[in-house]
Amino acid sequence: MAAGIDDIAIYVPRLFVDARDFAKARGMDPDKLQRGLGVSQMAIVDTNQDPACMAANACLRLIERNKLSPKDIGRLYVATESSLDESKAMNSYVIGMLEQIYGDDSLEHCGGIECKFACVSGSYALYDNSNWIRAGESEGKYAIVVVSDIAKYDLGSSGEYTQGAGAVAMLLNDAPRIMTFDPKVTSTSIKNEYDFYRPFGKETPIVNGQYSNLLYMIQVKKALMAYREKALSTGLIKLQEGETILDYIDFINMHLPYSNMGKKALAYLLRHEWRSMPYWKKIIEKMGMVEPAPKDPRGTIESILADEEFMAKDHEFTKRFTQTEEFQDVYDAKLASSLIASRIVGNLYTASLYMGFRSCLEFEFQKGTDLEGKRFGFGSYGSGSSAMVFSGVIMPTYKEVVKDMNLESEIGDRVKISLEKYEEIHENKRGPNENLIDSKKEFVLVGVANTSEIRGQRTYVFKE
Ligand code: CAA
Image 1 (cartoon, rainbow, N blue to C red):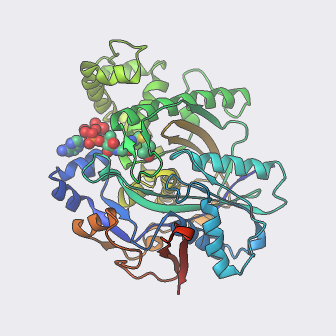
Image 2 (image 1 turned 30 degrees about the vertical axis):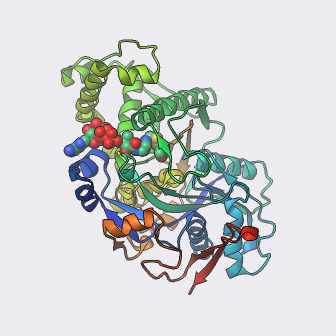
Image 3 (image 1 turned 135 degrees about the vertical axis):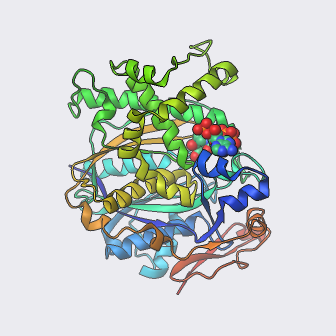
């Protein structure tokens, strides 16, 4: 049985910080954010928003748009790394909010859990729910996977300019209108690492930035190599002499902690794939530079990062490579459209990859590209660390859904906030009811109990 994505709904908070204002306040060159990292605006949650209500808002949009009844939904999974409780799962909050609309117990048989593995957990949730459908356990019902996060780093840290917030809800079934996942090729890599982690009770992560960038690329490459083996052994892809697996992936979607990470990762993967190809020599000649190798090619990530001479040469090599026509062709054709949303919403952790997919569908549709039958490859990464590579093929019915996608109108009227206001929110100086903007037709947080018997209990209402 087939399984895939039938529809996608998004929720992005309307407050945002502008990268230029941010750069000015931190004494940085705005070009570093806009050109260096690809960050123009970062969505920020208001005081009465949290990852659970963003997830519920995305779900509600998905359910309303598809005129679903609660009994049509067999499973609702929430993947997040912005967990609200050590025990109570985030999907239970979402069920509670949806039942305010659909009635008490209307979703009582909609099973699910909260999934955690940094930014990759949404991909595991999609895979597990697709297998629930493939196994025939769904009995014609839908699964909803929601990815929802607030990317929040310490004030003044290098992660602070890669923040953002939002949720993406995906409707899965056995006759998907958008994309069917390729069976038996999903591949993973995993390693116990501390590139980015958030110990219990700490609101912001401890991050080793450059280490995490490199680890991301290594782990995705390893998962891609495993994907390649599976794609070849199952016969999904048949490689001819001089071809690479990426030649058979029409669109590439990467995890996007910031927009330019997609470009960085594409360059890394193409270098890996093209190195053994006959045309690589020509590309190198045009670049006028030999591909550098670290002093200790079998060294650790730490030793590679500490090898300053290699890192500087490698940086220059990557820069020249990304300027070649060969790279630019792949970048423009397969990746660029997926990066547009990330520039204006920022990092969504678990939701970044899927906001990128959504972005690619919408902006390729606007360009008039015919996506039917095209294969999308996904490079998902979660710190800590694990990567997942998988793929799917766009269905003939995709236009029915994609024609109505409109990032701007789905976000709604955005409100730019000053750095002063942003810092107040960031440092939790305002209570839930001291929100900056009014919400309509959405769930908001109205209180978090602080008396000992019910400490931590959260109350949400639907604002008409
Ligand atoms: N004009 C134009 N470009 C400039 C510039 C200027 N004035 N100054 C710097 N740049 C460029 C740099 O050349 C660099 O581009 P390249 O990578 O293409 O060379 C880019 O801007 C970034 O500069 P730095 O590498 O110096 O940036 P940094 O050290 O300040 O930090 C970061 C970047 C490591 C991503 C940091 O923001 C960070 O720690 N972020 C959080 C961790 C993270 O996102 N890691 C990503 C992988 S892990 C993951 O993906 C999981 C997750 O979601 C967190």
